[in-house]
Length: 163
Image 1 (tube, rainbow, N blue to C red):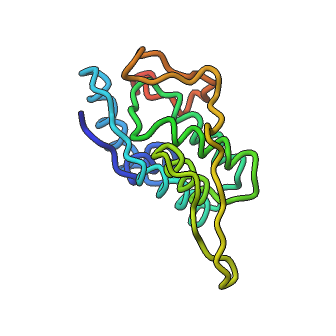
Image 2: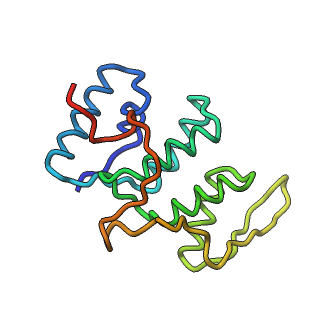
Image 3: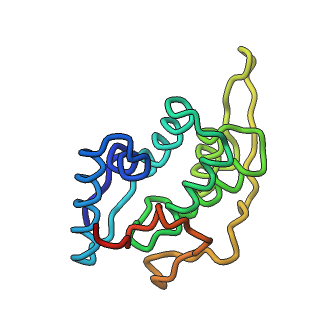
């Protein structure tokens, strides 16, 4: 199973460089045609949010939409998918940035309920809920092959028409 780098996802979605978009689209279509799932590491998901926010100027709502659409794609398999879903939920419902919500979700899924950090040069700790909320329709890819399917914009689908 091939893994995707952040740049492939960015070029595919942003379409800001025609040659790189076409190359990314060909690569993704080739994998889809062979029925290969594409693996997305947690670090790629984290970097994607950072680039969209800091370099592309996307607001929180737009980032949440794009990342939710990615998680809904049948062709993608995510490292620590439940932690990513929990992190997006925390990001949506709190004032924390995405990196902090992801750290918290990953720690919680590893059985750690406390994160130590600094804010304004003062040490503090914050706690994860024992069972972070999960969307009711979310299921593990490896268990059922069923996927959580919110509305996905046509531009996001990997099963796009030839062209």
